[in-house]
Image: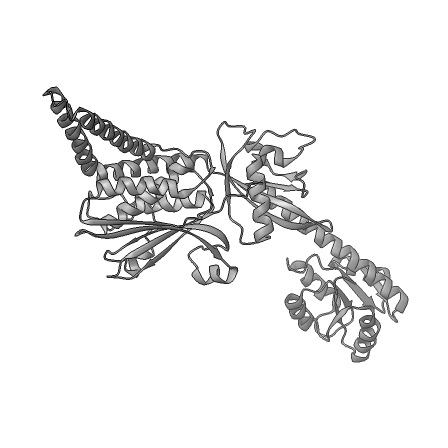
Length: 491
C-alpha cells in the first residue's frame, strides 16, 4: 500500500485485541488499541485513525455512546466506524446505525470478511479525503483575489479562477494556451526562473498582458510546479499591479525633480561658463581678430557641443516611465553619469570611474540605469558635506548559491554586472540601515530630501531582476552595489 492506513481497535477483552492485531497488522496496517471508551476517544483525537473497529459491549460507556461522541466531534465525524458485536437483534443494529456506525461485524469475526471490509473502507475513505482536499483546493483557488492558472508544461490551460477571467479575455469552453496571453520574453523568463529555482525561491516577474480586459494592465507573475494526477503541472499566480505602477511612476517623477533640484546650481554654473565662452569668442570675431578666427570658431563649436551634451543628459535623466529592455553595455551609460556628476558636483569632490574592459552586456532600460547611478551619486555627495571621493566601479561577478546565501540582503546566485558607488562619507548606523530603502524615510534635514531616492533605486533594480547590497561602517563611508543579470548570449 502506498499509504499506511491506521486502524483503531477498541475492545475490553485483551485476547480479542491480540487476535485482531495479529489478523490486521500483516496486511500492512498500523494498529492502535484501547480497552476503554474514554481512552479510545483520546487516542482517536490524537492519532486521527483511518477507521475504527469498535466493540459494542464495554464497561462504563458502551460502543454506541463512544460512536455517538466520535460523530459529534468535527475532527472524527467522517472517520469510518465498524462495530463488533455478539448481538444479532434488529434493534441493536438500528441503534448502532443511528449512533453513526457504517456497518456491523458479528463476533466471532470472520477473518476474510474483516480483511475485505477494511480494504474497501480504507480505500473509500482515502478517496473521500482526496475528494475533500481537492474541493478545498478548488475553493481556495476560486476565491483567491489573485489570478491562478494551472497549465500543462507547454502552457495548455487546465484550470483558471474567476480572478483570471477578470484580467484576461479567455474563451468559455476552450481556454486555450496561457502562454499566448504573455509576451514571449516573459514566458522565457518564467521558464528560466522555474529551471533555476524550482518550486521555491523564485521571484515575481513583472509584465504587461497581451489580451487584457482593461487596457494597459500590468501584472506580477510567479510560477511553480505542483503534482496533478500523477504528473507535474505549472501553477501561475498573477497579481494586478497597475495602480501600484501608476503610484510608483508618480513617486519616481517626484524623486527625479528632487535630484534635478540638487543638480540645478551646478548645471546653471556649467551652462553659464559655456555661454561665457561662446560670447567671448563671438566678441573677438566681431572685433576683427581675423588671425585667430578659426580658433574662436572652434571654441564656439566645442562649447555648443558641450552645452548640447549637458542638456541631453538632463533630458535623459528627466524621462520617467519604464522603457523597453535592451541589451546594453553599461559602461556607456556610466560614462554619461560620470561626465554629468564631474561637471556639477564641484571641485571639492573627486570623482573616480573604473570599468572592466571586457564588461558584458546587460538586459536593461538605459534611462533607469542612469537614474539608479545618479541617485546613488547624489546620496554619496550629500553624505560628504565637506567634500570627498566618490568611486563608481563596474565589473562582472559570479555568485554561487552558498555565497549568495552568505551575503543575504536578497542576493541571488548567478552571473551579474555589479555597478557600485562608494563614498568616503559618514557611513550609515545600523538603526538607519534597517529602514534605508523605505519610501519617504530620510535622515536629511527638513526640506532637503523626500526619502524617495533609495526606494526608487530598489524598485528599478528589482524591475531588472537584480538586487542591491550595502557595505557600510560608521565613519568609514558606504558602498551600494547594484547587481544586474547578464543579457542572454546572442548566437
